[in-house]
Amino acid sequence: MTIQHLSEQASVTELVSVLQEDGCVVVEDLFSRKKIDTVVREVDAYLSPTPCGEADFFGHKTKRMGAIVRKSPASHDLITHPKILGIMNAILGPSCDRIQLNLTQAIRIQSDERQQIFHRDDEFYPVDKHGAQFMINAMWALDDFTVENGATRIVVGSHRGEINREPAEEDIEAAVMSRGSALIYLGSAVHCGGPNVSGTPRTGMVISYCLGWLRQAENQYLAVPPEIAKTLPSTLCDLLGYTIHRPNLGWYEGQDPSVVLKDGRLDMLAARDYFAPEVAAAIRDHYAPAAVSIR
Ligand SMILES: O=C(O)CCC(=O)C(=O)O
Ligand SMILES: [Fe+2]
Image 1 (cartoon, helix red, strand yellow):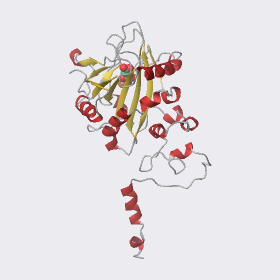
Image 2 (cartoon, rainbow, N blue to C red):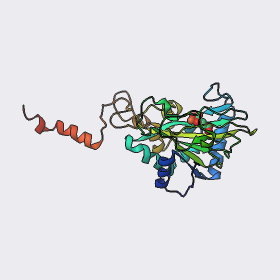
Image 3 (cartoon, protein in one colour):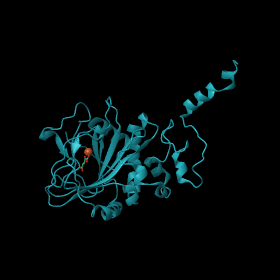
Image 4 (cartoon, rainbow, N blue to C red):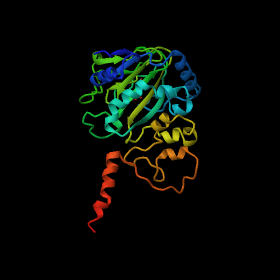
């Protein structure tokens, strides 16, 4: 089965339906060339001097770099792209109060890098997921992705069933796509970084989103500390995790963590609770005068 390529005109509903069926989809030219050029420039300033990995899984001839939100202001529109957020909210939204950023990572596969082991990105959540999605990734092409330069390889439809780390050659598809396009794939889709035999590096950027109640792979509060988060739009701060996940997850001093982005003392705050409206109403009813009048 080949990877379906849809235009950036495709609706969220169409994209979600392909993702649910195939586990992956390429959206062509989702970000304009001009904007992607700025992201490339900003990312490159940090990625070029970054050494290659020292890891069998992450690669010895592959450079990886995080904290994209802090390092590349132009990436903000890409991370909060309405179509991408629409997809994430449609698939992950029903299983959490809000979605969040899981990781941001530029990946430059250099020439002669071998093929990465086939894996599922959601393997690091060690529970039986019963077919639920915990994470969805967008792999943005910062270079044209080709078969030769290490385009991400993926087994279409592999988000169901047991993982096969040695899929048959005819089941493996390369996400060949132009700079500015994005491969969106479920955390349960079996894939890997392709081998680069092209003589030139291939740069991609993974923006990964996950259920709001999970531990994020990249520590977003260290990657984007409050002094910097203060300067960012609220949609982005919310995605980083500077907001409460109801009920009562992620608070700071008993309050919504966005309190650290505002001025004022933070060491003597009144504790609040944060529940969904129906839960809050049930708790309020429990303490209502009628309930205690038996005394
Ligand atoms: O670089 C790629 O194409 C994919 C890398 C990947 O799947 C990973 O590191 O988890
Ligand atoms: Fe992966």
